Length: 158
Length: 161
Image (cartoon, rainbow over the protein chains, first blue to last red):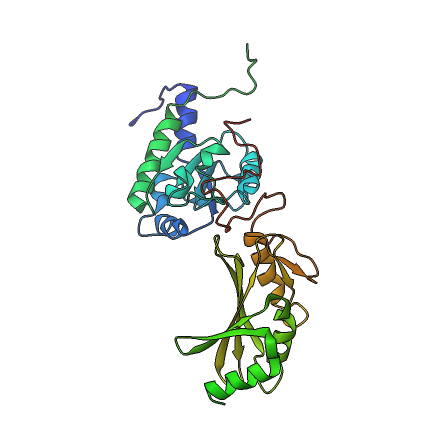
């Protein structure tokens, strides 16, 4: 008999491995960064190489929220609702300077960073960020997911 | 109709409503009395002037001036392919002017935007609500007196909750 017939791992490691390569992302696109998102997602840079190629246009089926573009105070309740509709476990990437800090807009209309509304895992600055930066951010997120302590929802919390 | 005869004809029709005439890059600019805006534009919309299109309606805040808010109307005549700009100043205390919704349908949103950003009231507007900001927004952000950097969160922010 050739090859291996068994391997050992820890359940958390296996779960992390499975989750990091099967990210279903929901693109929340509001502005010009969407162009960079498109080139990242399409064949030239191909986000699918890293297992994050399946775009879902319903937050209920997604576990990675890509917030791409400027978020205003008028839009903020919508973003919060979208985030709340996603099932656990879920992660958020702030894509572009506007989502990270408000970017060039410091005025009456724009939220100064989406982390004022929802928790953010990875910040990708840039106006807009290069697709390479986005992929780098994705790899960093995958690394985090791999080493993330899994939240056993069914386990009783002390 | 040459520009001079046009200005002469407008002056004859509108009478004392015209406070001044200027020229801006070849286009005629009329300064109007604020209370005469609606009848003046109603007359300009009809022949022989034929300014059938309201291209734009906006406002400028001259914070220090007597008539603080200057409303700017841009008209266009399809028949004669000429433009006309009209300006009218309203004071800072209770700024108000007559609405043009009865003349041009698109004045609805243009006036709502000016109301939203500058707080100028348009009398006779069917539903003068905010257009770009949201219900509950306090103040008018394009006024010079609006504090720059002032944010008005609609939902409680995480670090404030």
